[in-house]
Image (cartoon, rainbow, N blue to C red; front, side, top):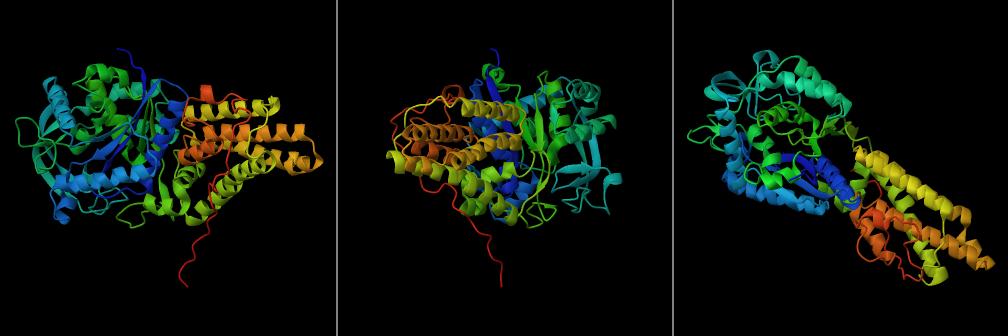
Length: 512
């Protein structure tokens, strides 16, 4: 059965704490892409997200809370799902690595690779960081501590019999794949970093743990499977591998896998090597988003500078948060996050530009035509401009360029605001030029309808509010091929004036 689905994944989020805005960034990005591909009619869309629940960090957090790991993760997962609901995340599947189907599938994958000689016995001796769940050679340690600049915790010496995945065996194949498909890892800086790592050679990967009980058991042994081997296989186990191959063939390979740049090595070297060993195709694109920084530091629980999504939603609305995150900087680069930048962009681009446009247009229609849409006009020049912006937005989103898409859409928001000022409907109403007023009002209303459809992937709540105010049936999430045709707004449609889409907000005063 041929693949017929656009398959999109986020990383699995670790369940030792609740989500912050950095986690939300990757997930909203995936949601925008999922909604976009649904409305552009690119076949079926399957959007996967979920949680990574095994490993010593989770066991330690559960013990500190006085709970069993499963009880602890059950409660934490509820908080993750609640956060995604608040952010309007439209995932199709939520996988947990504690799902029995996933655990059984990972065991089958492990045994298959062991039987074919890709997982072999050995002995591991080295320095292990419990926080990062990573082994480090002594040469990499910094003052005897974990070399990860976000960690720097003490490491412990581990010596145990273990199983190793023969990662080094696939180094040359990976080098060839990187060279043949230079765009399969993005942004370019991520490709360069991983290509350089490959050139330096690869060591085999220890994929078992003796001292870690909170994990997937290796069949017939007391050891458990390394949490990263377990978690990273979720993308294929969720798709049906190996128990439902008909479903798997409809979904795999993934079209886009979104990750944070801190897990690049796992997703662009270890993960593809596992897939090659399983004789499965590699994902078409792995895209690493940058970090949201606060005063130059990546948000993290240990630093204490995390921002929870609910805090921002309360002040700026869910759509305000979704917009500002992707209008702020190109996807794939780090960017600074501050209250001043958020308030400034929200007020200028949402409250003043988009929100004010919708209020003015529908208020004038209510005042001059009792809220009823006048006769359809050709709007040739405006139509051409809108069609060009649709193509620009589509081209950008096809390239995972969120800011580029928003820029294309905001060209039309700004052009309609300019059209209001230049056409002056209030002057036309006073002059009695009904034909000119009708044409102007129709063009404005139809333009607002197009904008409502275009912003849907980014701002579904505001989009649907405008759609309803324009008296439109269904939702703006219907396919753009049907929705974005000039003149679809029927004459005589009764409209209404919605509440302010984006009320202005002020910077909160600090302590006196």
